[in-house]
Length: 92
Figure 1 (cartoon, rainbow, N blue to C red):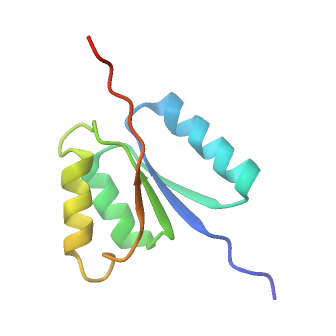
Figure 2: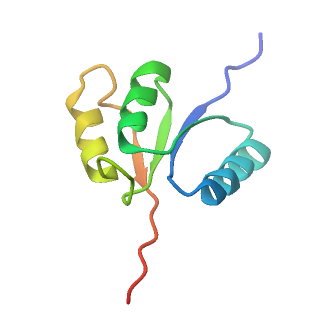
């Protein structure tokens, strides 16, 4: 029986960055990818898909990545999913 692919949730509002991460993860790591472009969608996707890992942007529309992380960690059903912060803020 084939081993189940690991599932990674990419949370990124920039479509180009999200696509680049998806390509790297699927082609290089062979993992399944689910995506979210907002903080609220991230919380919903984490609850619905129970990914093995979440790559979380901080600067998201609606609620921030930090707030989405807090909500995920407050939910006993998904609180143990590791979350890696992946963000790029420009300094002016």
